[in-house]
Length: 227
Image 1 (cartoon, rainbow, N blue to C red):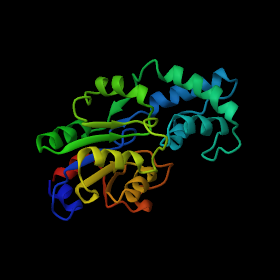
Image 2: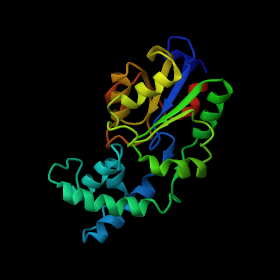
Image 3: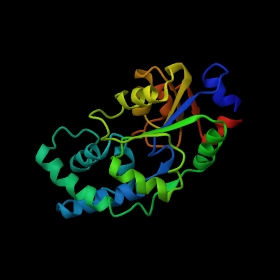
Image 4: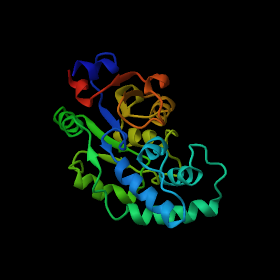
């Protein structure tokens, strides 16, 4: 608990906001399956899990564009190509997330925060339609006071809109909050919202070490926050 309090100069936060993919859950196996099925249906070669792991983090449309470009940089993909690919991806991914798993310590961390009376929010770039079933299947549905999906607002992380909205709903200041994520999108969104960011080492950050983005704290396991 001293570690968590140390992020805010010795005071426990009143609100903790979480990213989802790469922070609380490992969803790459299901995302890669849906991506590869999309590519195959479009007559292309499957990408494989290793590539998809480096492409996730900016929402489904960007993942589809990166898969179609076979690269993180995707400016060559047309709007028509994106629309065709996204329709297939959303249909396939919507059939379920049977390969998605919780990271060790994720559920215990949510339980600990709830026991401390700290408000909890989810701010993810994953489309809203996938969240209710996914959270129910992983046992996390009961923990979040507010949920922001990738299409809740027009802006996605690294834009801070979702974080700012949650803080407004909770009636807290940035100095009373912590955001926990795994990628530079999360660090940048937190920084833009003037919120301290805790980053995990095990998530998806385009193949780069999260330390390069200078979050306030880096942990290998969420349970380290309660030491």
